[in-house]
Length: 431
Image (cartoon, rainbow, N blue to C red; front, side, top):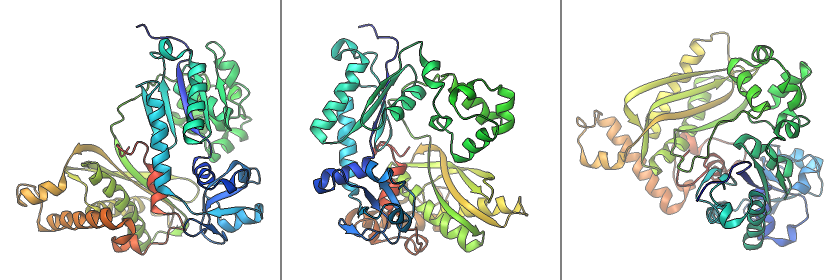
């Protein structure tokens, strides 16, 4: 059966997903401004005096409440705000159920987060109708069967489908017909483009660039001087809908990473090791759960003023041990500060492990001696320790046992479960 051409790429995005799930679980919250987290305890309502907002309903967003906002600030903006605790297992269950619905329309589904996915329906129109009709059916099925609102963008490229789904929010459909892409994009704010954050928006605005059309009319040389060669070239291409990427249905992880914003703190060894230990635990746990390890460890250090540097190291022996990853990451972070002696503070730290291989570290530790693993007794003991921690967490929950840097570290009220959901797209892949 021939494949259809034209606008056959869909981007489907659940609206205010975490808050929508909470309203689904407790119908008395429907239509009310609510925030997940922000100091709420357990699964009931909380005062919201501490912690951060993990997610907000559209009713709360109308008051200016946003994710990442301190609970007290959210309360000051919206005195009627209701704070609720997170039901993380329900988020995962419902997110997976939505993906199952998508898979009934096309096998070409690329899940990019817990609550969004790209679909290529070029091979499905003979079964289900035109892409716009498929988008409508997706929304109806998700709403009727799961009770959740869904916005869908339909376009010729992944980039444009995602932009269209953002324009469609909340709970709508936007179809960008072939040949109208530039016309559709031109009046939109540049902030809707992939990779345009607050700082990039400010740089562009300072040069008089506010819309995608204005960005498209800016010369490549000017963009690259403003944003750097790579970012300038990428955004210039997206502004004219130049996006050659295809749907990736088998998204094997190319890297596994985690990051933590620190505000602005003195870059002491204690701050670096504690934060990197916390991140290493998250990354290494996901690697081991996927039966993988990585040979390349990269650490990103952001200084005040948004300047960031990265340092990497590659080893012939793949890494999946929490403590080993912590040691490597700490050495790389310290090297970043040695190379930048004028910097004394840090605003963000990130760890990424790449060059991944299948690697059942637990089995290696049991079956091979230290010489065969090219590891000393310390590394074997670390593998055994990781195995014990993983087993205890699997049985009693993640909070039951941990490394000191993880257990003692205060994270501003953001639960590990939420971080894991945010960092993991398809739960079958750590990408």
